Image (tube, rainbow, N blue to C red; front, side, top):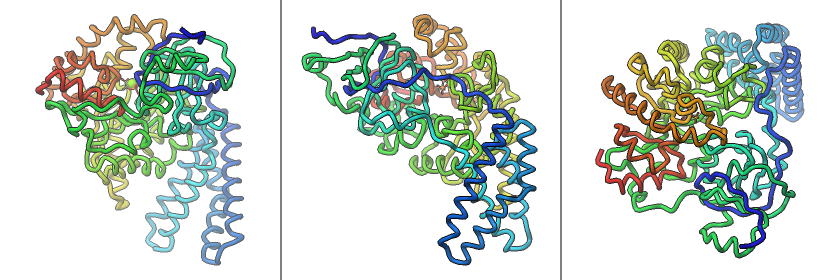
Length: 531
Ligand code: PEP
Ligand code: MG
């Protein structure tokens, strides 16, 4: 054995990588605080001033017709009435982005509904300035600049936004002192096939030191020797593997033995290079990872484009899009509510229903993207039936509003995550849900009172699996009686050792990370699943 320092943690099953260390600057602060009204005023003022300056710069080198449009937009940006309306919204507790969108909404609707064609045409100019200010409010994602492509991120934990902002096409990996294989950054890494080891404990290492991360065994080696590297004898050692080797089952594109196989994604980057024919569709799009700022939450157009791209990729296959699942372990800087226990607080659908302006924007983007393919909407963290009913009512209202404006839409099926034990036990009360998706990551967390990202209780978390399986079997039986589809999109679906039990529970729809698809197909084929 060489003199390399060896640290044992848990791996994410995504192969090996070797590279120079990038040391994370400082531990992450888990929650961004809510900005004060004065900070929100200041941000909005700065974004508007920046937008005016940008438009003035454009005016310098343009023709007369374009200059007229730009002049109108600048005038609107400086309109004190709009400014006062936005200020009033901030005074009511809105952040700058939502205050701005809310203030402009009435104006835009007024232009769109005008009898005068010239005035109607101005609506587009207003939408343009609405989105320009939102872009100015976006701000930069977490420090992605200092983290060179191809290096190994070493730190206590890693923010999902940093993972998403990084270029993983050139390889690289992650070694975390803390963390868990069920954390969100671990889910993202698995989806992209980025090797990762978590829970390796504290250790001292200098930046740029050569480190090997074995995502299969969870082993991290500092200063590995040539012999260490050779001993692992893994293919594609330097470049992260995109997926496990394809088994024979992968050649057949679709369902194995009547089991539908879908993929969990966090954005188009997870699937862009994949043939959509290798799965039955998208089982879970985690939309909270598509956005990097509060301004994105208020940006209907941007969301519409992001959803449309994925719907086009799916080429007619269903695309299940989950509403923003914010709060708890998925805070968005400067947005999440300040709570003593955010895991039991205003999160998921609760947060969305408490901020209808945000939910309406996402609903409109989804209704519009639904016209391009088959979208199914999934509600996160549902506890009681009224949450589904209220959300459905809101979708119907927004659909009616868009139809009145002759915008092409399609009303999606509305289903719910089954991840809160109270909902799983009372599934028969959710008649207004069109379908169910078992979120075993959170369901296990709440059922066993063990945090999904705490390695100190990871064993207990695992030992509670029989309780989880019993609850799953009960929920599947109830869903069948109700005549409603039920699938699983939690991590458990990607664990080959759990597949036979899930199938025995009656599960016939499975959604896993794209990098796990081949292994799951092979495991199902080997298990001789006959549906
Ligand atoms: C789950 O909780 O099982 C799930 C699929 O959702 P997330 O991991 O995004 O919380
Ligand atoms: Mg969940």
